[in-house]
Amino acid sequence: MFLTGGLRSLLPHVLRKMIRCNRLSISNTSGVAESYKQANVVILHKSLADEFEKFCHANNGPLPLLYRSKPGDWKCPLSSDSDIRTDCLQYRRYEHGAYTGSLKSLKEYSEQLKDMVTFYLGCSFSFEKAVQNAGVPVRNVEQKCNVSMYKTAVPCYSIYTFCCNLVVTMRPIPERKLEAAVLATSELKEAHGAPIHIGDPGMLGINDLSKPDYGDPVHLHPGDIPVFWACGVTAIEAVVNCRAPLAFTHSPGCMFVTDLKNDDVTVRSSGEVPQVHCISQDPLHYSIVSAEAAQKIRTLETLIGIDPGERGIAPLRRQDELLKAGLSLCHARAVLLTTGFPTHCTHQPPEENDGPPGTLAVAAMLQALEKEVTIVTDQRAVNLNKKIIDEAVQLGILKRPVPVLSYQREGADSALMFLCEGGNPGRPRFDHLIAIERAGMAADGNYYNARKVNIKHLVDPIDDLFLAAQTIPGVTTTGVGDGGNELGMGKVKGAVKKYIKNGDVIACDVEADFTIVAGVSNWGGYAIACALYILSTCEIHDRYLRKAIGFPQLSQKTVWLSALPSVTKEEKLLKALVQHGVRSGKTASLEMEVDGLPFYNTHSLMIEKLLQEAQQ
Image (tube, rainbow, N blue to C red; front, side, top):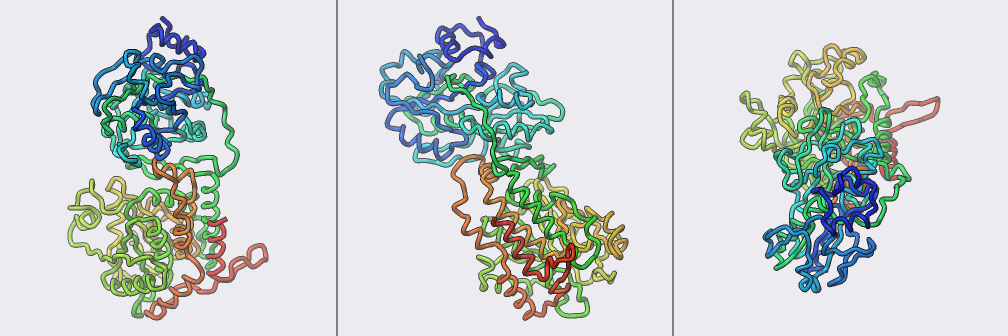
């Protein structure tokens, strides 16, 4: 008998011969015949073959098709001198969807196999050597056990009788090595490619990592993050659900070893280089984006950071807040928006026109991305907001009306009841809250405009919702501001107190998870909309969002493009705001110079610059 260590360097044809002769003392093929591709195996009646092939193409993350045989063909061009009846360590038999036994050989079924087709599907064991070469430990190989495999709550793209939920493998990866692991696997498409989820297993519907559905439990070391890849065992779930009279598969972890080498892949452009960013601590959640898309969003962040009013906002800025907010929003299902800064406290209405246009720009893009969108505002401003939204629909800025709600503090649990079904933190109505130029509560409980005038009598305590969100797992918040007294700016209140005029009094005390600082808050809203467009058109991020199942969503690009902010849209909306009595709170035409040259003369130039960056 060979020990596992001696199998790493064996050539595949030698390994297959040993399997055929039952001369191995191993329970799975992880770590054997390093650098060679391994395959999941599914054997179905020829009448089901075309449908199953379509199912594979529709879910090519978990089911990358390496080869489809002809009926009765036991040999495989992926490997010399092979026989699919004998060359897997162990097989499974399924009858009418029921598992009816494990087999060491399929020779006794040779007659039935004459009418059956074999599918060879890529396997994540194929990328283990590449991961190790990148300096990333492979814990299941270290622990001499099979990889952990889990059924998820994520439905695959159904094709006729083939439908099932995604199955994933989990490999613990040290946090500092996450990006290396993603980079090492991202171009190995025939071995499932990049991960489909990084972080909390509960987000996939996995309740207990110590109890895998297939394979062995793999121990996480301190500092390890659970990383999940799409898995070919998904095919077994599809076989079960199609209830074929007779079908065979490999036993999970007992793969068919091919003669194909995993050639080194060189990632050629920044559009193909993945980056990993943490977007939530509770639950722990990381997202993936291309370096090219990330750099575009950083450019947006720089553009909106220009300080036309010379307020001294530069020290308030934090790098990648726009990027992380955008990533989080892409993963969101339902978003709650708020705006409204009654800076004109002696006029009616007291609102300024910085805030609503940026908020509606975000709402328009979220609608285009099929997110649920709701706005919450002060009770006194509900009717005004409804009228503005109706006009935005008529002007073509919004696809459909956005519900407008108000919030009042009626008890200790009012915010929780507003945000969650029945006040249950396990059932949130929204998973992301955004405040754009919304008056924020100061440390003394009051609300101040930039001139240090207390406007508390005009502001409902919507801050409560942001504070409550901090206690609800899976609910993330973003604040956009330009002076430090806006909701969400509590994250940078130290800098506000130090660098902003009257900051010691006006600084907002309520934090957001992500704080986007802009020269004009509307710019922050426009930048979020543009960032969402960039992320949605990023192939690497799109694949991660859809868990590598189904088809790319880039066919919706025209819809997303039409939802972007524009100079024309802003002009129409500003006119509508004026008609409703909303006054300007900041200079409408901003002039400044950079290195002695005109840079931004108007808001229009800013919008054009943001659009140019988003679309190039």
